[in-house]
Picture 1 (cartoon, rainbow, N blue to C red):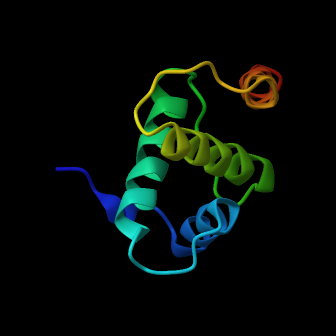
Picture 2 (picture 1 turned 90 degrees about the vertical axis):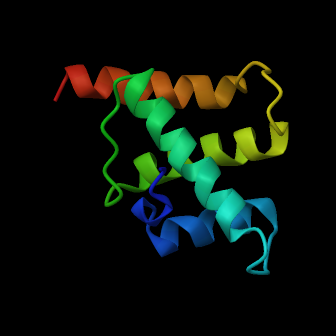
Length: 95
């Protein structure tokens, strides 16, 4: 079973704000999008996310918002998101 409590509440609130959501109704769906984005960034891109870093949280929430808005459609990532993911991947190798 997927552990939805793995996402911190402040990260959830940031994602909801980016989506313009204010109610509690969509919390589970947004949490799932965040868990899926975190897993995708870790498994597919090799990025170990640190929720203490603003740039990591920003990429995580943007990826989750993109996936949430696509509603399962597989479209290309926005260029700005690709660029920031690449920067995180490169930063891992130069630390």
